[in-house]
Image (cartoon, rainbow, N blue to C red; front, side, top):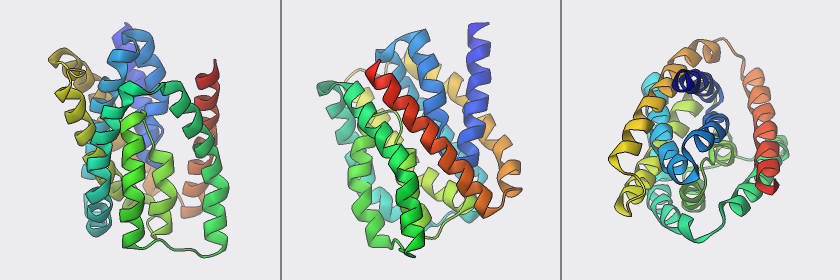
Length: 240
């Protein structure tokens, strides 16, 4: 029964993540910590996030901006491995609290960029990839922080979801390999992550119909709402 409830939560989280490109980890991580403990939940989440991003890549394959994903990944992937190795040396609550504040700030930052018609170019994605990849290696999810860069590059809806997912996919592969290398991702945890990750993949497929029916303006509003909620939740959890 507990596993069934976890899979249902994974389906809902995968659908949300499939609609706006992030949010799956924020929904699923508390349940994983409750069931398995933080030492198991963090590397398990790396496996489930890898699967969720792979499914978004498959769903939006035809709309991906391959150049943007490749340029971003060049710096983000190695930085994610370095971040995963750094994870064991810092208090995760501090990182989560800071990121929660950043998530909330992303809403006015994105609107400020839009009002001034600021555009991100390929070399900006490469510059952003390094620090964002490093932070992704430390915490569960940084999807909301990636968002303004890919949106300012000109991507929206399916193109945004697929391209951001491809860039994140490389980071989570790197993160999982790093966890595996220092023994934090044994075979049992991998199998548990694959089971839970399958529900996230199903949610990504369900989400496509919702995304296709949304206007660009509605898409941005939903994204901003989830940013604020996720940020507040992370800050509250960090200081409890």
